[in-house]
Image 1 (cartoon, helix red, strand yellow):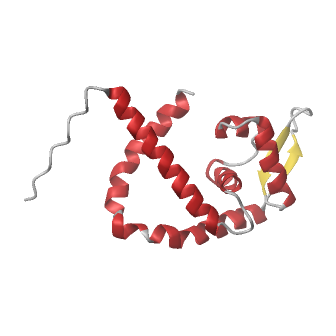
Image 2 (cartoon, one colour; image 1 turned 120 degrees about the horizontal axis):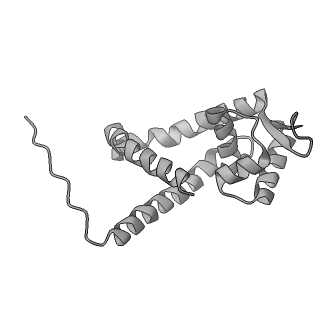
Image 3 (cartoon, helix red, strand yellow; image 1 turned 45 degrees about the vertical axis):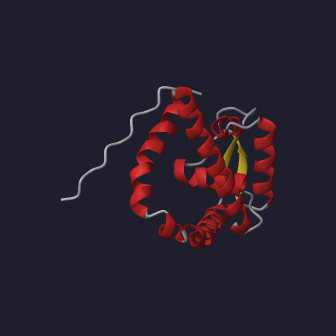
Length: 156
């Protein structure tokens, strides 16, 4: 029967530990974003793809202000991203039925297709991972990363 290895005790300096953790996450985000950017179709940027993916995952009908808050960007940055996606026909921006001063963002069928095409384009990039980063390892660390994301989201 295989013996489980004991987890190392956390270092006494938890600040340094958490810095290392977030530093690694930041570097991973930068490297993966650059890798994804090279293969995204439809001249999508990572930010544009992320917004399309967000609408598929969590539904659409969000206001630009709420999207800006969710993505932790300025309203101006979000407006720019939305305008580019609208020009590509991937979203539509409608007046809010309950508040004429506000707008709502909706994913179009073309936007869903662009998101799906992006995922298909990313598949070969991700398929190269198993050799050096086995799926079992990804499955093992994913719950911890999700837990960290949930905590960070709740404690903005």
